Every structure is written in C-alpha cells, then in structure tokens.
Image 1: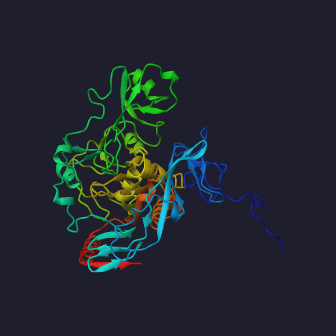
Image 2: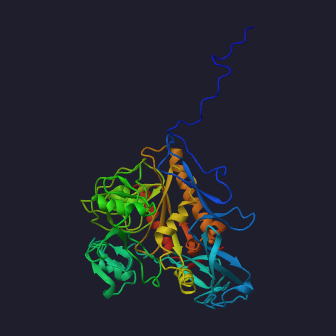
Image 3: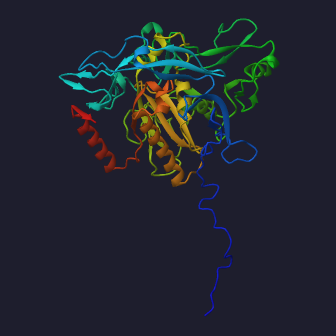
Amino acid sequence: MTLVLPQCYLCPDPPLLSAHEAITSPCAGAPCNASQTCVINRNCLRGGNCQRYTCVDGCQLGEGSGQTVPLGWWVRVPMPAGGGGGGGGGSGMGAGSTRRACFKVCRCTRRGLSSCQPLPCLAFDNCQLHDRIVNHGDRYWVECNACVCLWGERVCARRACSGKLPCACPPHHLPAAARSRRLPNVCLARCAGATDAEIEFGEREECGSGACGRRLGCAATPTVCLSRLQAACPQHVCVNTSNCNGQPANPVCDTDGVAHPTACHLLLSGKRFGYWGPCLKYCSHRGTVCGVDGITYTSECAAWAKYVSVDYSGPCVAVGTISDLMEPKCTFDRVLCPPMKQQNCQGFTPPGACCPKCGGALRVLYSKKQIDRALYGTNISATVVNLHNLLKALELQVKIAECALRGYLTIETEIFVSIESLLPDPTDLQLEVCVLEAERLADMINRESPVISIDLGLSALSYAINVHTYPTKGVGGVAASLITLIFSLTSISVLR
C-alpha cells in the first residue's frame, strides 16, 4: 500500500486571518518597562515605517500594583481612614455608616507622585428613596431611568420616559452656547441648567476679536467642563508668535491635513488651524460634517480629534429623538445618513443624533459631586477634569488597535461612549471585538476597577449601561417599543 503525502507536508500552516482580517493588540505582553505606559498608535494600524505603540514615561502606583499612569496625570490615591481631609461624607440620609474611604490627589511628575493634597473623606452612606433605603453600591430603576447609590448620593439618568427630548424641547437646530457647552437650541441650553444671562445665540467663535492681545495668535481649544464650579473653562489658547523655534514641540494639524511642530509655526504659515495633535489618518480632512454631539466640524478628522463620531456630511440641521433603538431618528430631508459599515450589525443611534452606526456603546452616568469635591477641596486647576481628558484616559483601556473610542456629553447630561471600528470595511469578527471592548469598559466602570477608580476624572464615573443592539425592523421595532413602554411603567426595582 502506497502512502500519499500532501504536496507540502512540512510547510507551515497558512495564517488563520489575512492582514485585512487581523485583530491586533500592540500593547499585549507588556512591551514597555514598569515605569512606562504603553499607548497604541492608531495612526499605524498596519505597521510599515511607523511604530505601532509608544512607551510613555510615567509613575508606578505602589509596589506590585502593576499600574502606571503617564507624566502629568492626576491620580486619586487611597489613604488610611484616619488621615483624610476631615468629614464631608455622604448626605447622611438613610442608614448611615461609620465606614469611610479617604483619598489624596497627586500629580505624576519625573520625581514620582507629588503635589499631593488630601480630599474630604467619603462615608459609605446609604440613600433614602421615598419610603425605602437603598444600600451604597446598589443599582435600581426609577420608571425608565437607571440609578445608583454611591456615598449617599443618588446618581440617576434624566431621560424623558415619553421619548421626547429633555424638557419637551423642539428638535430644531438653532445653535446656542452656554458656559463651556454648545447645544442645538436655547431650550436645551436652559434644560441643561444655563441661565438666560449665560446663553449666547449662534455658533460660538472661540477666537473672536480681542481674544488674545497684540503679538499673540489664537488657537481654538473647545473644552467641555463637567462641573458648575469650573467657572474658568478656557475655549482658546493664546500663542506667542515671536520665537517659534524656541518653543517646545506640541504638534498641530491644519485644515489641509499638514502637520506643524507647534501652533506658532502653523499660525505664521498662514494656514487655518485644524486641531491639536498629529494629523490623523483613516479620516477625511475635506468637507464639513455634523458630529453626533450636534456640533458642526470643519472635517471628519477635526471631529475625531475631539473624540466625536460623525453623524452625517454637511452642517448640523436637526436634533434626533432619543431612545436606545438602533434606527434613523431624523426625518429632515437634508439629513442623508451614510451607509453603515455592515448591514444588520450590532450598533446604536447616539442620543440626539440622526443616524445609526455599527459598534458598541454605553451610556455613562457620572457624579458631579465627586468632581466638585476634588475641585473645591484642593487647589488643582479647574481645567484638569474635563471631558477631553476623561475620554483620553478611558481610551488607554481600549486594547484593540482597530477599535477607536468616541464620546461626548449628551443633551441629557450623560457621557455617551462608543467603540467603533477604524477600518472602512470591517469583518464580522472585527466589528464584534469592538462591541466586546465596549462591554469590557462598562464592566470596569460598574465594578469600580482600580484602573478606573485611581484616575481623578474616571473616578467620577458611576454607572455604565450597554445600549448597543440590532437594527429595528418592522414588527421588531414595534415589539421593542412596547417592551420599553411596559418597562417604563415599572415604578422601582432594585438590582443587586
């Protein structure tokens, strides 16, 4: 009997996935040393002449902790309960607790953690809810809104159970600005807590006349602050244009997609300022777009630089209705939704936006009181805790290079976070892994992972709710709506 061998018996097996189908995690295996943080370079998805990750110097948090934060970041470090900054615990409502948690806020410098300042200690207080007590850490629902009890504070969503916009505002897009936020219309600005004296009509000009003095250029830096105590929330940076070469490198990108070593070099070149940071790849630098946050951006890349996903091409003209259904939310004929990266994918329609997208998504409730305590109890700059810094810190926890984090502050005053594929034509597996990354982030927030609780900004995140689903179709959409309606009639149910 003759044994017939394959043509290439000793040849290596072909790869399970082609280069186009690959899912990569450049920071897996701890490529940096213990005092460095590994940061994925999403401008370099396929290698070549670029480095797929960067090792950033930082501070190791304690012996054997395995956690490192980059230079310049502020962290919240536990302290013995007897050494905190006094009381200042919860509201004292419900069955109070003598247990306390104490922290200090420190900054990572080349000398290690420094500029440490104690925060008021937090008591493990329960919450009073009508005629019942909700334990610290318990999650529950009030009609259609998710809530959590933390340190005696009730942190709840503020969604209108009727399906209307907050405060029954109209879906008109007539831009208004209030403090550090830009909102689709005046009604939504008032609903977010702005007074008439604080509201500005029309698109805000961060670099209007007189923004900076003589011999100084102006570079827009739109910043969303998360606390009313942050009265100073700068929206622009004044740039010294007298000695560009003597300034430290801080790359910026112009509206043509050309990189400059500093904002000074860009302004003297006569180019229009695009955004801070190196020029992004895998996006377009041409054509105005509407972001899912209801703000018009000069290009897709300019939106991405602010962690904002694009809703549709052209300026913003409408406000979408709000629900967790994955479906188009605007009927305005000028809104043309781009095709989804894959039909029947898991995805979402961001609150207030018009168009559905593929990917994972979560609604994140955050505690304004936690941010207020950090700002009121210390002398750190009020600009340390803002939306951009919070999303930047959260982005470090997305380990798959082909998945990008996007996020914005919604008109419901929640933080909406999505994890979307950077690839133009992703496979089922590449889309699914981004959904799993979103679910992993939600789990880290809900179990108060040390990675979340140690960061000053991320420690204010209280409750994350996964909202990605499949597109509604015919009866499926009606059934989903009925389930939502029935659920909203449920008064209160406590989840342990």
